Image (tube, helix red, strand yellow):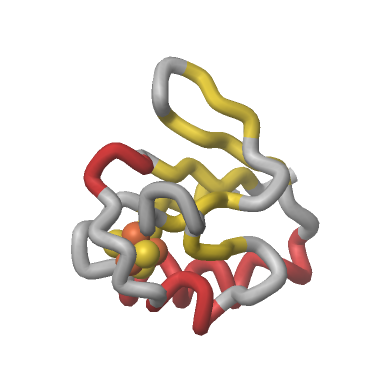
Length: 74
Ligand code: SF4
């Protein structure tokens, strides 16, 4: 299964990932950074398994993230 990894600490809350993959990302009301919906935290890094069909949108999110803190592994 493909996996998304989000190094959230360095998120600048630009909303780009939300625009690319709305079902997987949202901006937190509390700190303004993005949240990987359904992600599990491990040492401040969030990880989530996705279906193959969800890969493309999240690869776009990773590509356009200005701080390069989203990784998608197939
Ligand atoms: S695109 Fe990157 S910097 Fe922008 S909100 Fe998403 S994770 Fe944060």
